[in-house]
Length: 139
Image (cartoon, rainbow, N blue to C red; front, top):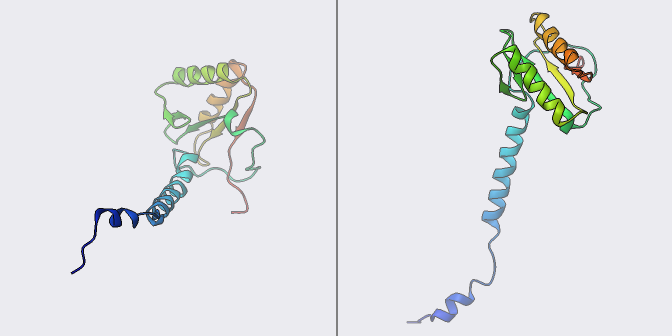
């Protein structure tokens, strides 16, 4: 019968097994691939078709304002209760970044008054850069 010493057992661990590390990397990659589209918009909206879907502004300058069919506003996914909360949120974002572009997302079959209220709020506070989000007509 052959006996192994403590020294021989430690010598066999001279290589790092990278298989678990690769498994972890692939799992993280899959998680990021799945969650990235969810970060685009927090409300499931059917946007009107037409226009350009590409933005010329930097991603850090864009503030997304969404309104659903019931008139509930969200700024960057954060729900707002009143119109004054919308105005306060836009003014605060504009003070932090004067190059801000307001990206308006509203449903295609919704009322015109909701996006008009966002545009009116921007105009009252001197925010002149905005973008109306639309669906790509080629889809």
